[in-house]
Length: 593
Image: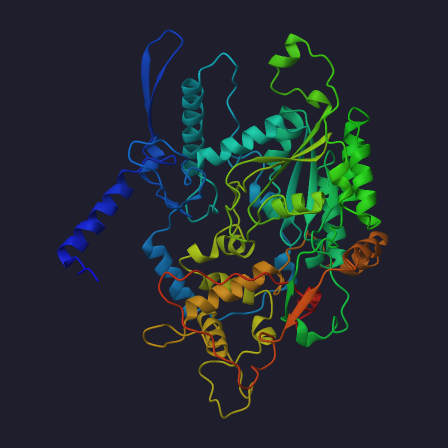
């Protein structure tokens, strides 16, 4: 065996110093940009970044390794990664102190009612950046210069109006916004996909005005994951958006309809883990309603008979292999004039309907496309930013789907609520404890997880005295119960416990739903609404063939005897990812006693 080459501490320090210098010199994103371009007269000009970059530090998330040979130009996997504003160390330490000291008190149900005006403030600088006007005669460099200059000015207006503490996380990567612009341009119908648990966070009024008024296109709002919310709440949100935005079509959708189970109403199985095996018989709920909305918008200008036949065959349980023998050739397009060829906004070009899917990260855009097609055609992940750039899939010869990367619009949403909605990657979260406290103040986490206070005597019965919980205590108690220990000192791993609780909230096993204004007062009226029974029937539709494996290694009851404790988390170890489905998400929405 050859002898290893010695590597001194001095060499290691030099290696780390060089790595920091390479990171510092990297010129991706909107910080420190400089671009030289040639105008129409051939004169060279240069534009640099705006003054706002001096006070806004960016954090670039989900960095991927680059494998390229020296001098070779290849694809940059970090071109579309998430760019969020970087929080200071003092701010992070301040929130950690709050998580240790602030006692959690249950907030009233009315605090979960959120109006869209309080989040986006229509008419303010919290607008969406719009692509500057362009023509086919412009050069690529000149167009990029206009877009970069406009985007930096757009960011400067936002940070001159609002402080960083008040603003939410939102996308600072211009390359991702360019993907949205491209999808909006080539699409005939825009699907704005939202999570039914937080739809008001994901619906940007600026995007609605831009699509319907400036582009003159139709917008369809998709309330996704309806199996994770009560039927009355789904009906209330649908009525809310129809009344506030009359030009929008609202469609309910879910890629994972709820299964019938014998223990469905057993409160002890709220946190039961069930692994769903993807199968050919698993069918989404909502494609028929989406087809009806598209037929209403197209008004006969596109032949959607093949899409209707595909949905009818899937609902009837027909052989899906027949699709392979189907003629996938696109019909001959009508003749176009020179004016049509030069128009970037020509709708239904070549007789094909292009449907663009846009929305925040983790709202289920890629899963919706897989549900419409009936098989996995695009990859999905719970990690925000998994979809890097837009991609197109032909659903039928006359219907084309266009998937876009998740993009967060600027707003005044609480950062903790953003984390719970899945827009921020949990493994990259530096301070998850206040988000756990935000969740525990609105959902009885302590009772659901059956936690014992860390300061209680183990010999005394649980609940013997009045307990005061803070966010750190909840994480500490959950780490003790689950056996989360650090690798070196074997202390309770509160960071891993906090990420575990947030992961359960993201999956829907601990369900936190925001509500439209006035829902608490008129909840009984919404429960008696005629459409509530229809939504309940959609949620309870059985797939008839999807197999599930029930695992009892994790539940809200006490740990079983002889259970192997969880291993300690090592530095740099990725968070565990499992595909789970909740058996009864509505138990968590019951009134807290």
